[in-house]
Image (cartoon, rainbow, N blue to C red; front, side, top):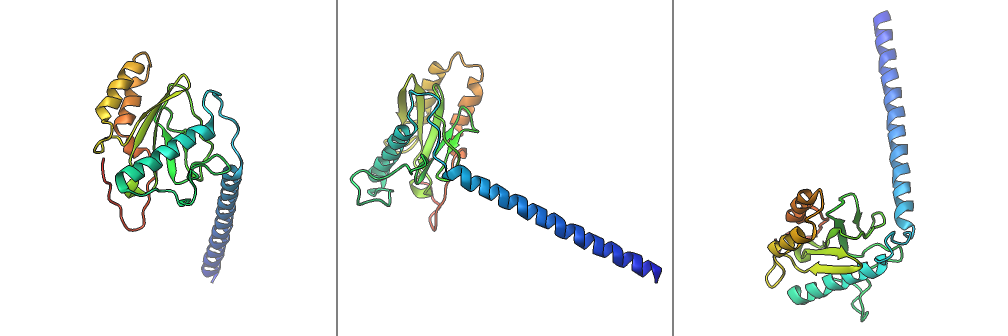
Length: 205
């Protein structure tokens, strides 16, 4: 009888602890979600490097992607088709319908629901539409306030990856971690967010 009583008390203790742990985890997750929501709903601070206005750079990216979608798919990606200039940046300075990944600093990225994107001099970025079938990859290098864009990389009539690598080899010749950056550039498709409903094919590498 005593053994059964001890066993019963152990079971009750485990259940109580499990319940408390679950509640704690749920509370922590809710807190993280709330923080995430607050983080993404706030307007970004101005880009640290004033040569690159975040909104203007994102607009260039968005309109470039829109033109690529028209050239390759004969359709604009933006749902704002009634606008002469499709809206590509939301009011909180996040991209609409596309992502931006910094291949020089992979912790720096821009997504519709992500943190604030920083545009930094001498960094190379990968940007593309999130919609997989039309996610033609573009690579851009920022230098002294200018944007060198390689469009529809490795697609028919697009820029080749070899051209990008050759360009960066010259530009980054004195950069200590050049090889690491170039390796990420070679694998640029790994640094992106892609989604689709019923068509997961990619029309070019």
